[in-house]
Figure 1 (cartoon, one colour):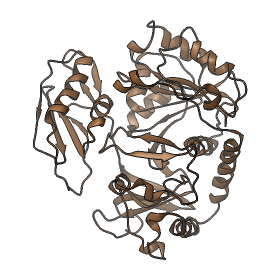
Figure 2 (tube, helix red, strand yellow):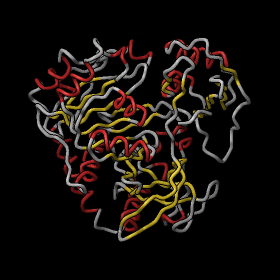
Figure 3 (cartoon, rainbow, N blue to C red):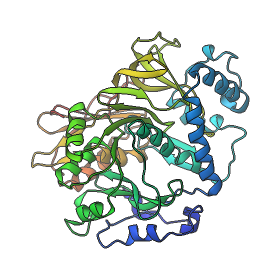
Figure 4 (cartoon, one colour):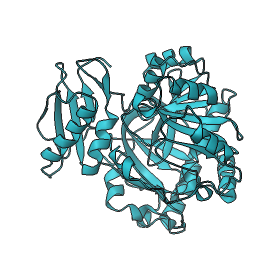
Length: 449
């Protein structure tokens, strides 16, 4: 990510970790002789009150797990109508509420912030726009770390948990990209246990064996990443033995899930999440289940304001969440599935989400398509698609009214050059329709995935 080179820290470590008094473990993770070339510093920004709020959130999830989802959404909706400007004129009955989508959030994100929400110490995360136009989502430190208790409750079902305490490494986020932010951090909620984000790309390490030595030495309890990063990790043949693995950002195939479980000897979860509300569901052994009781899921008819009956296939809509800066009411995800209810649990069937796509190169190796997403993000395209043909060439299409072919070509050419594939031809195809009624896949290839 080109922007990495210009980022300057505006916080010191006492501000990054207000809930931790002893930061020696963080410094060890950063200064380890086999550590990668970390290019960023990050902390959870949690003070003691924030940590307690997270524990309270975990208790709330347990409590909600034993209640009716319908009673939850009625209470949530009532509060949202009184506290969120965007919902103030909504009908009194949740059943009559209209749906919303990403474009609504992009046009007026401030309208979705609770009047009661504190405006101090807010954070902002910008998506890369992998499946459409980029989006900025605001939240606070407690909300940013709320995925941890969500994951804890998921792991508890198999008798597993997260590491706690300084001297341990709870989470290693694994990437494989040309460039991305990387850092060593710690979780105040997990009593100072380490959190590292590493990039397996060879250019990010001082020596070829450092990645293996560093990860083996830290022995992270949970590995997170996407299918492409986990495939690269297997190819390095690092004999890690985590307690569990979580794949996200794109769909994990059943075949790869089995390979990962056999190689790393641990359960592998395919977690479906969105920046707008974080974790939604998880898939294990081919079964996909709603992950959180503070979300209410429905299936809507594509292009219609109509809720479909149980078992019908349509667009998944999400309501609820714990972000005071973005409470969701019937938010259309752009993903499609069926919902089944069984003994108080909700399952997602025939789910169609984002499949991992990488572009093979004629001389061997492959391009991680996330690098194209990052290069195109500053252009704020309404939509785009890069399709790889059987002869390795690329066809580029984009939506919107701007004439951005020169800027797009420069961004794509820059990525190809970094991969040593500057001679790979690419052309522009027909513009993408502004309104299609279908989700546009940003990356497609004629090669087998």
